[in-house]
Image (cartoon, rainbow, N blue to C red; front, side):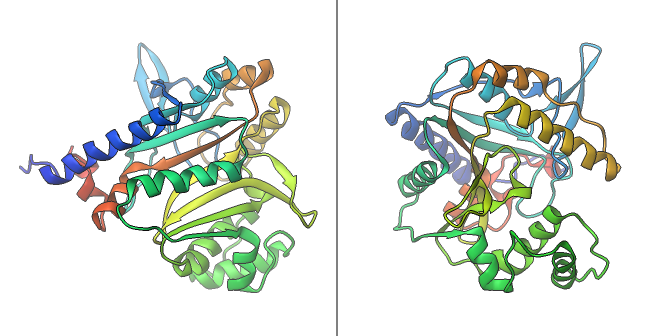
Length: 315
């Protein structure tokens, strides 16, 4: 029976050093660390995230896929700038870059938009990486048009389904618009991103998740969110946060309907988050960054198991 950890002692020391550097970065920039529960009464309604259920004190709870909802309740209570560095959980995560239990860094800046937060993501990575880091910024639309010849904001769903079928090798790709866009970006665009830090912003509005929707400079409604890729690996996902409780409730219900259509488990909307937003959540931007993936990049590792003491295969 193999009882030994997957990661070497040297790697685990590097991991500890990375966590200390992250905490130092935010201490110097006046954001304080918060400790929030990993158990909640609800999971997330997102179609593409499956929460892990847990039995506790005779009731059903869910291991949290991120600290987001609890952190937004703190923001609504007047916390100001905060960050959380801890465990998150998602069912069905497997592969060289995925594990059902992983370490997530999430932080929120009050009064910022997503472009100012993108700058801080770059500042953090320059603080952590020993060498100079090339920085590239693209709108989602310009990348999509460059690599596919299609405008992702206006192209017909049928055309997206055809292209998604071609790039995935599945000719019967009759999925919703957002799923088609995800597939095309993953297969046809992401592998062609340049090395260094790539920040992609202004996503199609069907992929808004918890970001606000506003017109871009051309008058096209876009989701005010961004993703960060480091040497071709997806690393972080950020939003100029939605603060309207009515719109958030509508999106939760849309998510729940998509889950019903897909035959997935019912997930209740988080009523306490909606109540916190109703009380008045401040204007803010937030981002979540995968710490295990960052450590993989720092150490040149190809598997997430190499940077974890005990991944799922070793517990």
